[in-house]
Image (tube, rainbow, N blue to C red; front, side, top):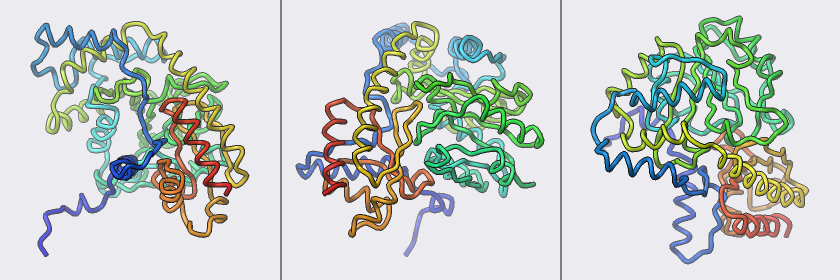
Length: 395
């Protein structure tokens, strides 16, 4: 039978989060009362002053092409943000605005990785990292970290994973899916290893930077090791902190040489990000930030409700999150307990059918036997959903 699919397309998987959402929607269409604890976006609306900036941009005719790498106003807002919040200084030619942080990462992988290159990815990882690596012809090298490791790698594991083919390492802190946040000491330990490998590009995915409540304040690896500045790319965006997921604005900052190549890749795919969304993103970065802490306080309260509920299930091992809006319990013992379940994918289906609760199985994030629970939904949904999970797990 004739096929129109490329080998490249066949080599990757569709988004597991979207697959869970589609399955939940299918059951809802059948009249089932499904509670979704799978969403990877804040449930808050975009703040009014940001929406107004978009309306003003639309009314003033900002509807044309912009420079491929973003408007001067947005790029300056990004530069100011890095200086103000991260004590990092960049020039205009070190900044690229893209159609979401995911797009920034895609551009980075396409512009720096060659066939056979290896990229070190700590697991649990954001589900798209390995597939974007494969699309670039490179090889994902996974370092596993369990709940006993607080879902974080250490210097010894990193050193063992580096080979003469290693081209890149990507760190995501606070982490999707685990909510783990690397301390400054932990980052220094990793940086000490990386300083011995000058050809390795360091990528720090800081998209959850502001959604953090642990004892440690946010730091990325360049903050603790400025010596890595010349080969580190910092990726961020407005989606999570500003509740702007659908606006699709992300950005990257790094060495001029790398940003130039990323811009070239973007010029042949999307060209510039949406002009109206760029205006809104500039306002988001430039103007008041106090509402973010209000969001964080709400996420923390929801987090605590989820943790308390999980503690009632003795077969589940839970590490409390330090940020994001996810928690990532280890459910391997629960899988062994339930006769009809042999892995986390079947467990997700079990909860979907028996408890009418949608979650994303940990194998999607490189950690089989775990489950990602999102608390980016109302407290009412969380309380109902967790009660259903307890009932399904303990009866």
